[in-house]
Length: 173
Image 1 (cartoon, helix red, strand yellow):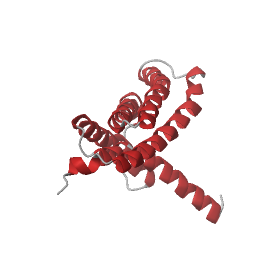
Image 2 (image 1 turned 90 degrees about the vertical axis):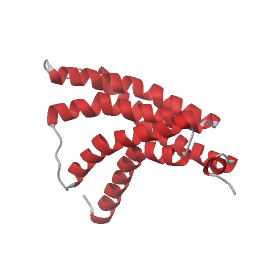
Image 3 (image 1 turned 120 degrees about the vertical axis):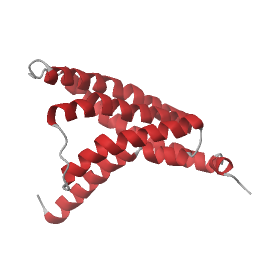
Image 4 (image 1 turned 30 degrees about the horizontal axis):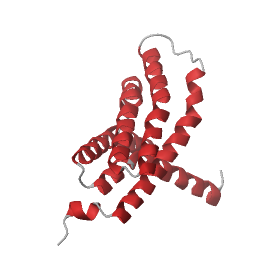
């Protein structure tokens, strides 16, 4: 009889987890590299909380490529555990440096439209999932579940984009 830890240690399963995490890390890296240029754009945010939030966002934009590139390297060399941990750190860093200031400045709209559901998902569910994925990866248990949990925000954003593109192609703009 095989146990869960024996099942997760199979080479085929690790290869697919590495490919999945590599795709997620590549998507996030391309997104990070495309948006890093906004660090150098001077924005008039005034003083106080908006200026502080802009500084935190600039720090997030500078750190994101480094953390996501580390996740991509870990996935490429076959280290699922460290790739999951790197993506969990990225998700928690993005929540801490971008999500919390956004909530402080604009609040959360708890509604049943797409924007309200997106905010609840990205600002509440995603950090909890990243913490759970990090805990699973630290214990080296259920790495498939940890990989899925750590990739929820990326999958949510890209599935929303695909749905939007399909709607535009089908119904026009």
